[in-house]
Length: 359
View 1 (cartoon, rainbow, N blue to C red):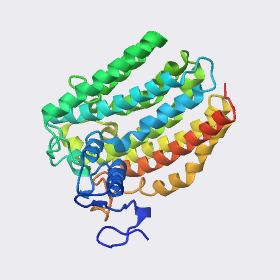
View 2: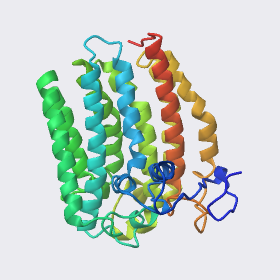
View 3: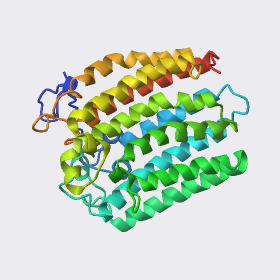
View 4: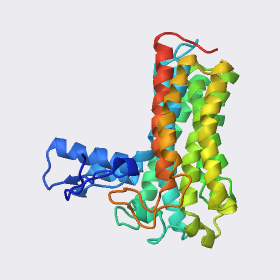
């Protein structure tokens, strides 16, 4: 049985995880334990925190796998298609990953500037806030945002030169949706459009844009193939915004869960998860995804596990060892998205290896 650092048993079925402790002057293996813990929980380990751990926390690298899955889905669908270039695909994958990093950084910057992020707001409670926790300064975080965006711009210009102006449309579209999510004057999150933003970004924009960058063309099937996984990413955001209803409603941040209320938002979140499985089967039937992608159905036991917490109120206090409190529904939705996304990618990878094409 896993135990926490103080020797108490942990209940993994309840979402509890061990708390990593890294001593002073750690060995490489101990450092790697800390890195892994930070990458899984967005929180630094207790004790020694090095530059790598700090970067993982600042960039919220724990959620980057959602973007990597979207990019890998595009690449695996493209790898057997005419015009595929491994180099341009990897560059596009780096581009969307940096775009996600930039989005995380800009969200912290803009939400702090408008006074939304405070020490009492969930962002500063489930993980150290880059500015409010003292990990870095506003000026340094802004400089990091500029640097990441400049690097992303350079990648986009290279791909535009190689693949043409459609890359520019995907790149600028992604940047505008990313910035408008929290930045004034649009602040899409505040207007009930943040969930739609995520659906479009992690679906057609990321998958379609990466596929086009890798091959130079974009069949209609790819658009539809991108939707099932995008529903899972949207479910994570729905869970997060449901967790934040008590904090967002007084600030007049009208996310979809705030507009619906928790009793209606939770069925919508569950419907998004069900929609993933329904559309996965439909995408295979429509020959938009290869049939080995049905391996994604193997995540159904995980869906069953997360179903109960997605139907009930959160516990009154933080469960022992739970890493991202006060987020609750978001954590469970993310556990399912991570498992389902991994299985989906494994299935599409098998299709690519054995040349099982859908279109």
